[in-house]
Every structure is written in C-alpha cells, then in structure tokens.
Length: 458
Ligand code: PFF
Image 1 (cartoon, helix red, strand yellow):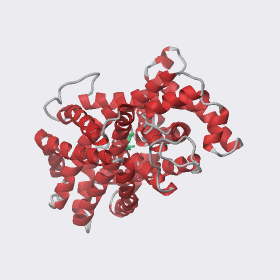
Image 2 (cartoon, helix red, strand yellow; image 1 turned 90 degrees about the vertical axis):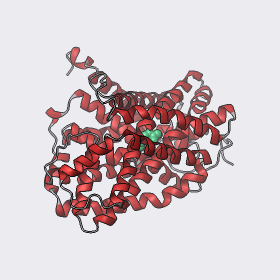
Image 3 (cartoon, protein in one colour; image 1 turned 180 degrees about the vertical axis):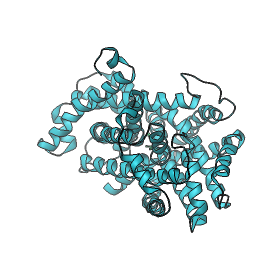
C-alpha cells in the first residue's frame, strides 16, 4: 500500500521520473544560459565554482526537495504546510511554496521569450538562412530579431500556448510521453556538434577558457551568479522538483535518482560550453557578449559544416523541446496549487496563469528593443527579473528547503523517506543538508552583499 496517498497519479516507472526531472532540469539553462554566464564571468574559475555549487549545494538540496515532495504528495505550498505540521513545526513553511511560485512566474516570463528566439532560429535554419554567412551577417540576423518586437511577441505567445496546453492536460498524460524520446535525441545531437567543435573549431582554446581557472577574475557577484546558475539549471529552490517528487512511487531511490539527474545536467552544460567556446575563438567573437552568445555562434557552425542544413533545424527543434519540458516544470507548481486548493479546473487555471506570465514576459521582449535604455541597478529589466529570481529567490528557497529537510524533518522521517539506512550515505546527505548547503548559500549571499569584506573576513 502506498503511503501518503493523494489524488495524484504516479510516474509509470523510475525511468519515467528520471526523464521527467531531467526534462525539467535540462533546458535553456544548460545550452543558452550557462555558456553566456561563463563568458561574462571570465571562464574557468566560474566553471569550477559552479561545479562545486552543483555538488555541495545542489545535490543535497535536490534530495531534500524530492524527499519533501514525496512525503507531502501535494502541490509545494500544501506540502510544506502539511509536512511542517506533521513534524511539529509551523504552517508558515508554506511561504516557501509561495515564494517558489513567484520565482516560477518570473523565470517563465523570460524563459518563454528565449523560447521565442529559439523558434525564430528554427525558422531561419529551416529557410537555410545561415548558409556561408560571415559572422557580421549572423550578428545582424540577431539584431534584426531584437529590432522586431512584434515578431518576438507572436513567437512568445506561441511558446506560452504550447506550455499551457501540456500543463492544462496534466503532467502524467502530457509530459512522460514527450521526454522519453526527446532527451536521448538531444544528447545525440550535442554529441555530433561536439565532434564538429573538436575537428573544425579552436577546441584547445575553448577547453582552456572553460577549465583554466583564474580566480582573480571571479568576483563576489560572479560567485553569486555561479550559485544562481546551479539552482537555475537544476530547477531547484522553487518547488518544481518538489511537485515532481509528489508523483514518485515509494521504493524508488531518491538519492541515486537525484545524483543521476545532477550528473547528466552538468555534463550537458559542460558539453554545451565545449561546443560554443571553440566556435567563439575560431571566429574571433567576444565570449562576453551576453544573452545572444548561443544565437551568434551556432549558426556560424551550421552555415559552414557539412549537413548543416539538416543539423541546424534539428538542433533548434530539440532545443525548443528541451525548453518546453522545462517551461512545463515552471508552470506546474502554480497550477497544481490552484487546482488542489481551490478545486478549479486544471485547464482554465493553466490558461489564466499562462496569460499573466505572458504579460510579464513583454517586459523581457522590450528589454532588447523599446525599453533597452531603461536601467535599474545598471541592468535592463530582463537582467533584473533574472537576477531577482535566479540569484535571490531560488537560492533563498533552496536554503529554506534544505533547512526544512535537514532540521525540521526528524531523523526518522528523512531516513524513512530516503530509505538508504542510517549509514554513511545517509549521514553524508544529512551533514550536507544541515550544514554545508545552508551555510554555503549564506556565505555567498553575504559575500555578494559585500558584508564579508566589510567585516574584513575576505
Ligand atoms: N532548469 C531549467 C533550465 O536549466 O533550463 C530551468 C528551470 C526549469 C528552472 C524549471 C526552474 C524550474 F522549475
């Protein structure tokens, strides 16, 4: 008999769960965001710090998040409240779920716009627009897209519609079928592109840039971004993974599953860097050019490689699917909460929330054209929305989630849920979840706020 039953369905198998969580984790964060963040933050030291964050902070938090989700078996807000009460703590823990829903709103609002760019590039690649174009014209192609907000708004509408349709149908019916095919196909295609970068681009310089660590180049703000990227890429700290954990059957190993997802996700990000930076250096592009990096490098490769006319459309189609499966994870917590707590129909809730997020997304669309000159804290509106969600709300949510899993849940509950006994593996997780992860998040926050240096500690 399954413990903690609720009205929700279960994943049909462990593999289905792994695929769905990796479908949420692997997305634009790995292929678009990771390389441009690395480029903006000087390369190797950022990458090493990011990897450290992924394993020391991200992995224990992912385990905590799935564990809490399976314990509560409801949407993140109800789960945090119910498990909190069960453990003799406060119902106010549900605020973590609320914060996660806000973060999901903010992230999906810009995520969908990058999804829109991806659709535009799928169109370009199908039309053969990259064929033998010099880098200046590839750059112009990107500029032309940004100069056409109407087109981006239309594509943003299409992307949000695609997301709302799947979430409106229900995750069990929609998502599982999709990821089963698409993830392996994406990995295969990235493998092909990697071969291109090894053979035809400046692979040695790309590797050097990614892995040679110059710690002087890593600022406190860069460390915060690396940590934010670890949360973003693993979909942590906002209840998305908790919502998926709610569908996980008993008897599936949470720790092994989480470890597999974290490794796959990190490898995909690194491989994306190994594809993009050799092209950057071989073509004399600027690694620090920002959000356009992916869209100004890969078309160069597709334009000149054999079979580029075929691989280009395939790549952008798969990137679109990867973005889509992640967008579904971003929308799911808010929809699950409205359905379960207010008894509203899944479909109408998905539409209403989708429209609100779409409207917020217009700010990102216009950050690259009409409102490009509007600056807050030195960044565009998009920069600020991304920063608030990824570098503040996600790590803060993750911090609270790991404190909950490590401190609020008693030893019996977490040992029971994780089902790995109470030996070294369990003790390692508990130590990381109680001490290492929360303190690291706190230190990075304090460092970025300049408090450590004001105290003369660094
Ligand atoms: N992890 C996704 C990516 O790397 O593209 C982004 C994301 C999806 C973040 C779902 C958060 C989330 F809940």
